[in-house]
Image 1 (cartoon, rainbow, N blue to C red):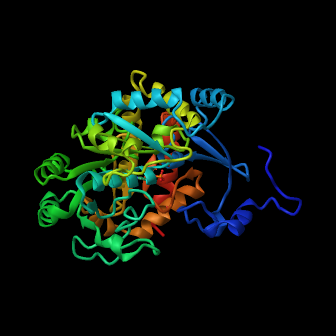
Image 2: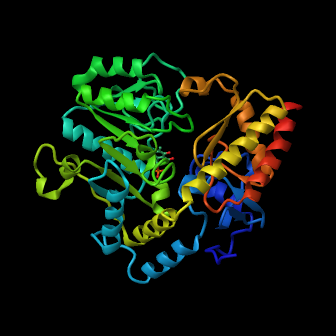
Length: 436
Ligand SMILES: Cc1ncc(COP(=O)(O)O)c(C=O)c1O
């Protein structure tokens, strides 16, 4: 185990120590019951290990930030080498240029890019660019979509009141009501309602922002192309939040996978190979608004970060992308994701449980409803108590996941045996749920 900074008074009860210093004992989300709380020591490949020396197969993979798995040799080597050469200059470095060039090559909408440190910031900056470019303040966001912990990303994230569209319901306290007034909420996969909202407020709307794969709900055929069309027709920008889908559904992300090109896209998570990253990529005429030569002009966009584009993250990203460019990578991602989903579907059928398996590529979620899941409201009707029992049951059986989210992430490090271990755990715990 690694050396830690334990004080003479500290105990080995790590979960208790975490509970004392962190609200809810966590870094955010998770929300495990106290008896299940745990503290991790290390990760390798598809596994993580805790202070009680338990091994888990990891199905969160740093919430999707580790496409290659934990401590991948190529990433560790690149980071170690760079750390000795300087970890941060808050200035353009060779690895940052290499990375931005690779993004411009890979991402259909990318003519230019700028880095920040998280997906939360990237989505926030993308919306800021859209507001500056159009001179308008409102955006359309889809109900239940997550665009980070920024002010608009927390609007109608887990709404409970299910207000009439396009009213927004804040999921977090501490956000001024003026923010809600500028966020128009639309139902995902419902182009007609989205278009109605867009036409009604067209003069005030800067952009439509969408997770192309909404959580784990797939777009209906034509939905994303329809968004592209109505955005053009109404002279508003289309932003893809590719924080999850970027370099995951395809090397070119969701825009390559679904063949729809937005004006701007936000990146984070998997791009950084487990290191803090965020990026906005898109049209040069929009990105150029943050050129510092424009400071003082009314449409100048302030975009700066002490650690954004740092060379350690950049080499981690470059090493990750190099691995992802190997032949067969995406076939493997899709095969392993399919194996995970097929096995879970078979188990649900065998046990006659009203549930379905969602997801595409290396993403998967189980929703405890037999009704079609197309948007937040249909997902919201699923049995959330069963969903939590399933997540906690898996956790108890050595599957590391976030019990507040239904999304399961697989990486290239997951073996067929790791998937089978998940299936065995799922069978046992779904059997218990179906026969309490
Ligand atoms: C689609 C999407 N956008 C943005 C974010 C925020 O990214 P970060 O956690 O890096 O701030 C997330 C995080 O889960 C996400 O799923």
